[in-house]
Length: 92
Image (cartoon, rainbow, N blue to C red; front, side, top):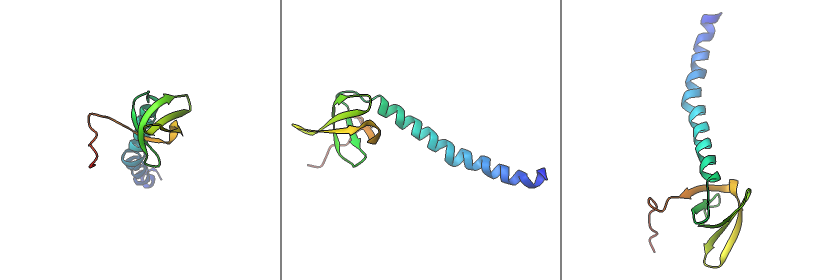
């Protein structure tokens, strides 16, 4: 009986290390990055809007998309914090 279940257990272990574990690590890294957002950081929202953080709360952030145009976003909806050193300039 144990010999018959061994391939199934091995498949589960491989599945865990190749799919589930890396996804959990990415989610943990993303959560850490979003929790560390501070005033002045450039962020990308879940909708693809890019702006600068002007105020940070426990739940919300105020993001300035253009001079004088601010929006309030839930921290959890931020998809990325843009590093100004590695960001490519826009083709304006």
